[in-house]
Length: 313
Image 1 (cartoon, rainbow, N blue to C red):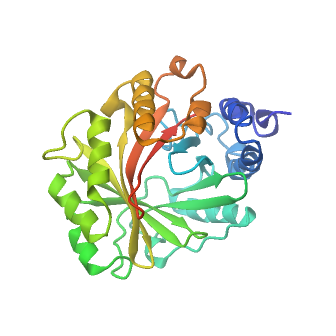
Image 2 (cartoon, rainbow, N blue to C red; image 1 turned 135 degrees about the horizontal axis):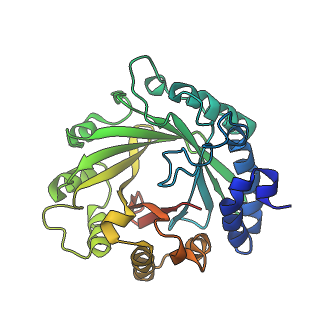
């Protein structure tokens, strides 16, 4: 019996991806399949079955699941809706927490992230999973909307180094790791302000600039990236443990063929293992345009650069 047989016919694209991943990560795929089944249960039972599998803001086609590859490890990674499209955005956080409880990953949400009247939420909440040969980890993505960062989340020197035009959009709460990852939108990030922020965080700015220059194919003299980019800051006990930038792959690099070529080129340069990426892409990857979503890159506390790429099934 296939994943689509157990979940819904609309899960066939996801079933195909898991089938390609199974030979390279069989144990991880088995556990990922169970977790995805639990997370997508509300989508399967939706009162709006005609739109349930094409109404999510998670992907460019509305599909309620996105898979991803990261250079940091060989995990099977996914992010998914935990509620049907008929669920109001403020109620989706509760749905996601119930899914995580079912998965044995209870996640408390800081009070400043809790939805309240007057906040215009865009997606509510998503659940994310990461599976390798030994363990499962989960993250709760919470819609920040107009939430303000509490003073105790980051040291004052770091808070002052964040560009004032930053618009915070989302937070990722990883209860297992004890981290909160902040995601914001930043228009035309300038080199000097990125260097200032990363230096204040104790992170290697040169590693980020090196990846950006090879990703875009241009010298990063004034701006790290053209246009608007996403900034992510991973915090743990008031410390910054990683930082990164995210952009839409298509507008920056072109179609899927161009994106794939660039990912492979950078993987060779930095010695990254792309086995999971190639399995996600599949041999017919170029036949379904627009599969790449966000492409991210950054630096961890150990100074090593990383890259992450999202692909819809």
